[in-house]
Image 1: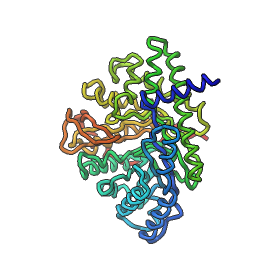
Image 2: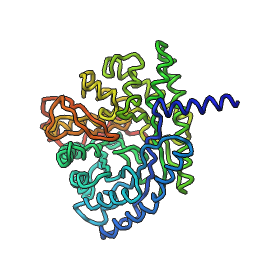
Image 3: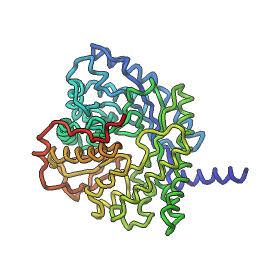
Image 4: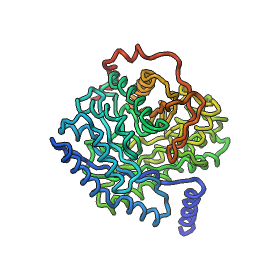
Length: 452
């Protein structure tokens, strides 16, 4: 027994030092519903007070846990109730001051990001939701750590194509309002978004959630790649079983950190999000895990099948390790945040078309993809519509986080810095989607969306 324990400790140390295992985020979700007021300034004051009071010890507690367990916690974050819901009572049309409030609150408690400058418009937009969408470009240009998301579709409601077209324009305007298009890196457009997602830029605190919760996003692409390396040449069922066992160990660590943080902060433990979240660092790549299965480069024929195996095995292993699984839980394939994806895009091994095919399997969608700065808003809206269709038809979360980087052309490289990495500017279709996007209306939900 002692030997087993020693081996486990040594294995964990190896995972952290050699395979870059970390807790990607501990995210505190805070309800702001009780802060609504007809006076916007008073409402923002209430929100600021509530966030700073609830999250005042978040960073300190996470740093304590890091020191005790020796497990890096890369990001500490806060998510809040979608601001469009909280700001509605004020009747204000310019919601940029609400973003300033979130930025101030985040800086006051020392977190890396604050999510929740958000709206849910899959079946239509209220005036407050319309105002929030219109405020996104200026809000993200004027703040440092605020993230924004808009849900435009669901399997039950269908696809709000007017919102899709509008968000195509908003993404373009957001990118052009900030250096290198960085504002668009903090904006994600969803289908089937979830209210317990701890990852940015799409995190918000769902109205169905408790008053305050702590959730964890784990990360372990390097651990998974090493596990796959140990079964080189073996059949795929052996690969799947190996990935499951590795995912079990990673998730156990995530739940331990989440429960410790919740207990010490005196709030409820929410969920562990099992998603494999890469970084641009060597040894922390989902693409390399896929290539370890035998693909010369991610993007080669067979890549989608490899991703399907990886996603399913991670979920199966994680579900056995944790009683509260949620969020997105799968594999992220952000181009700029994964050194293997960056290299594949530079080589031309992977295209937008192949990325779109992979999004039918992965956790999110077209994520951190740089496109030419002059890409028409209607083409960006078309990408959003395509991803929404994949999500709606497959009852899964999909999203678009594309950056039409100002002044760039296909083949250029855009530097975002930090966890956001860098991205080769990828080619988009030269053919127009303008007439298609001009139709507006709703693409109805699929027949299998009506389940009772």
